[in-house]
Image 1 (tube, rainbow, N blue to C red):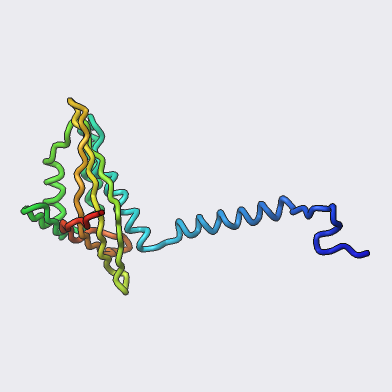
Image 2: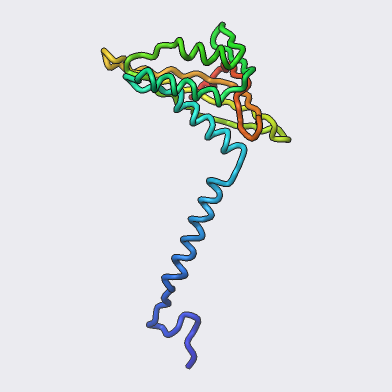
Length: 178
């Protein structure tokens, strides 16, 4: 009598460890390729994540670290960037960097995070409209009291020589959550 597809009734089918390893490796490679394959949207999100990190200030930051951090921020903004903060309008990258340099963070430091990021790329991928929510957390160095400020922003970015830079930032109202 001939056995069925799975062999004799008491026999279990065994899979080669090599086949299973090859399938798992293929899945891993596909995930890595997807994650790191060049994409304008992923590049914009990475750019904003790095900016949030540069805007974050550890408590007790040294003067040298502060100057280095502020100087590195130039790469995130277009020379003619326009930023509105409250009633104040900042009209250039140099003015923005000077304003950041004048700002004194609280002794406990500041942590900046951009969440709820949505990216709408132009058809020709020359610019992108981005909306986000900025969360700014700080801790009072003396009392230990933590505060979190939340602000919505509409950001426009453009592709400048294969590097995304911020051209405008406007505050926006946050949607009310139930």
